[in-house]
Amino acid sequence: MFPPSVSGRVTRQILSVVVLIALWQLVSWLTGDRALVPPVQDLLAKLLDMMASLELPTHALDSLRRVLVAFAFGASGGMILGFAASAVRPLWTFLEVPLDFIRSVPPIGFVPLAIAWFGIGEFSKYLVIAYLTVIVVAFGTVAGVRQVDQTRIRAARCMGLSGWRLFRHIVIPSASRGIIGSLHLSLGLSFISLVAVEIIGSTSGLGFVIMDSRLLLQTDRMIVSIVAIGVLGIVTVLVFDLLLRLMGLARFMR
Image (tube, rainbow, N blue to C red; front, side):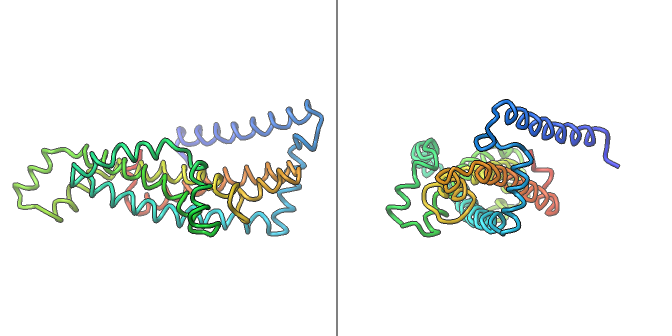
C-alpha cells in the first residue's frame, strides 16, 4: 500500500492525463477536422500502426541512443570542467562569460553550423545535444563546490586529509546535490536539443519523423511522434532517478 500522500499524488497525476485527453477530444470535436486535429481514437490507431510496422520503436531507439551517448560525454566533460574551474579560480573567471554566452544560444542555432563543419553524421548530432549538457553540468558543479562548508574542509585538514583524499571524502559528497541537480536538468534539456538536431539534419529519429510527417501532411503521425518524445523523456528521467536511488544517492536529489 502506498502512503496517503503518494497515493493522492499519483491520483492527481492520472487525473491530469485524463483531463488532457478529454480536452484534446473536445477540441477535435469542436474543430470538426479529423485531418487537422485527429481525435483520440485516430491517434491510437496510428500508434498501433506505427508500433506494428516497427517505425515508432526503431526511431525512438535511435533518438534514445543519441541522447544517452551525448549525455554521458556531456556530463563527464561538464564535471571535469567544473571541478577544474573550481580548483583554479582564474580559469572559471576566464570561462564564465563565454559559457554564459553559449548557454544563451538555443540548440537549433548551432545545428546548421555543426552540419557545415562535421557533416550530417552522428558526431554533429552528439555535439549539438552534448554542448548544453556540458555547460549546465559545469555551472552546477562549480556552484556545488562553492557551497561546500569551509568548516568541514578545515576540520578535515586538521585530521590530516589533503589533496585527493580531501577532494574525494569532503568536496565531492558536499557538492553532490548541486551536481546531481544539474545532471537531472541537463538530461531533460537533452531531449530539447535532440528534436532540434533531428528535425534539421537527420534521416532517423523521432524528430525526423515529425518533420517528415509535416511535409506529408500526416498530422496523426506527427502528434504520435511528439507524444512519444515526451513519454521517452519522462521515462528516461524516471529511470535516471531510480538508478540514483539504487546507488544510494537519493539524499542528494532535490
